[in-house]
Image (tube, helix red, strand yellow):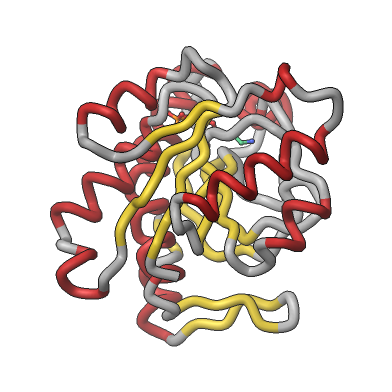
Length: 214
Ligand code: GAR
């Protein structure tokens, strides 16, 4: 799973964090792992500009041009495979994926979700964490299954919830952990230190220590 395609919809800060780690840690020289393409479903996604600046091939597949999810996903699959992509990294990709896509790349799609799953799947996670009054919140990286935000968990990072927090301050604190956790998780899956076997995540002790961040 050496060739990574990143899917984005917006800002792309997680994509940038993964890309920067891949350069700093020399993923290509050490393991032959690299980001071979970035695809956005929104033409205005800021992350595309950064990818272009870094010389990474990009594509826009606007979901609004398709009448249903499956026809959008068929084109997405073609594009990912056209880039030579083997591992799909969702980084703020705000489209629900159907079994067509998920089964095609089973065990080869990662997502980052801004909450400690299984708490708070779906949207507005920071508002909901504050509303629920939890004292610890965070972020989860997981394999994607056909249950929304329900796939097997790869790694998590926790942050405190402070009495002064609002959704924006909490989101910022979580985001800085996202940028630590996601590059690690992507590297460990791309190098097959972490795998999905019969719907369970398998990893060695050293990887598990790296994937629980407090
Ligand atoms: C991140 O906080 C990510 O966890 C979240 O969107 C943001 C994207 O930021 N993802 C989801 O909510 C997925 N359901 P980014 O574009 O700067 O990486």
